[in-house]
Image (cartoon, rainbow, N blue to C red; front, top):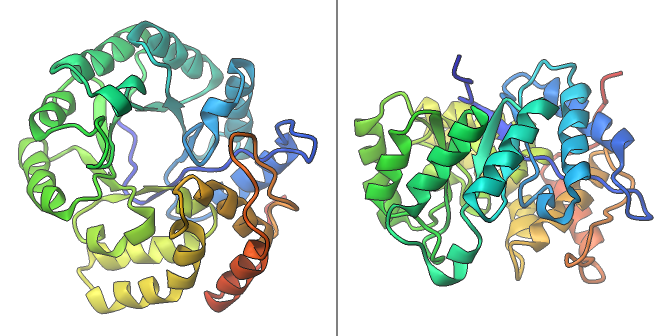
Length: 311
């Protein structure tokens, strides 16, 4: 049965202890809180926000298991599939199935970011991963300013392959968005379309079935309201939520590097009472002095305070 991701799909961070080990107690707090919120459809682990490629293979599988356990299986866990080659990515997906993952978010082979891809290679990646693992897959569209962004024909061919049921689109080029999203809709009406434009969600909210965003870590409640406003074509309500969240957006995602957003998300989770510190793994680094106070002020302005974590 196809997963229903039509709503909010947070991409949780991976919490660490202050000495750098994976913090499974914090995963329990984060996962149980997110999984208790009506409108959260899945948890997508081991992505950029989750520092997935900074974990050992054993840690990756343990993180999947820990997030599955955190919701008692009530909310499906989707795993980022990031290995470079098709064979290794297929084995990674197969191991994720054994650990409890319900679907996979397939990252492009990372060499493509620098060198580009051969026509047909992305299609082979999805096909071989699915054949090896049987894991339902999400098509991941990278930003237009990378060489790993897929042209429309490539997206259409992947979306038509067995096992592919949704797309996470982060093209960050509205000219392409307004051309390619309708084409995907027309060709595959059942394909679930999810935006991942964390830093400027508003322009994409009226064309999607849901969100797959790191932002869901820290602001799930207003993002669920934003999705509802988008589906109702209520621009006034959507814009009001956008304005409410703008200080948080600026302090988490409008930084010098999008990678800094992961560190800022962890500080946001400190503000929400889920984490006690914002430890990350290198090559991520702490934010500059003063950032913690700026983030705290932004969350206060947005009315995002501490939450009660389910027992």
